[in-house]
Length: 74
Picture 1 (cartoon, rainbow, N blue to C red):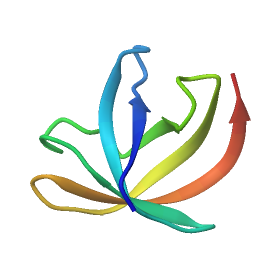
Picture 2: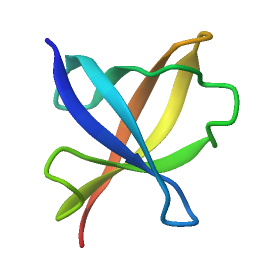
Picture 3: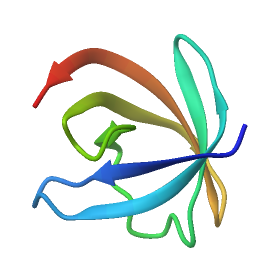
């Protein structure tokens, strides 16, 4: 999979990422750096109209695996 998405951080800033793998319970995301990524954030596939709460399960320098929490409407 190669789909664009946005990570929405607590301060309402966003980080572009690429969804490399997507399932019902989580996803693998690719971004330039995961260094400052918080343990929890929102992920949007539709320019922030809706978002999915995520929790980091694992991470490398440029990839992060997340598990999905409850669906949140924006």
